[in-house]
Image (cartoon, rainbow, N blue to C red):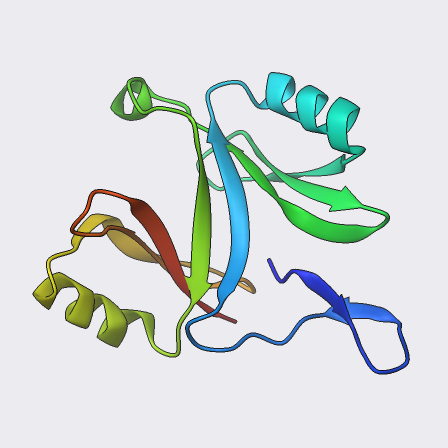
Length: 139
């Protein structure tokens, strides 16, 4: 899930990540088809569906062949009341250590830390003010 950037030659390629910098954004939605249509029609995004281990697809959004973000469909009774929202992810040097510090600073972990092979180690948190944020150590 690296966002694209360009190297000194101007060629598109993965953008290196830095600790503490925003890294990725994804829309969590109850209707991925509707969301893909909206962002496709209004921004010109195209989508590459990727099967998720839990079922369904994750939609990788692209513009001019470069990654722009993702769309994840919320499925199941545990997320039925969850409002649709964009979730931003910040790159961190060590998810586990940073989550420990965040918990001591008043955050709550909203789901157990997890790994996505080839993508990275991810934590989803609610900071003390109530905002949701994702932290990840990219692979």
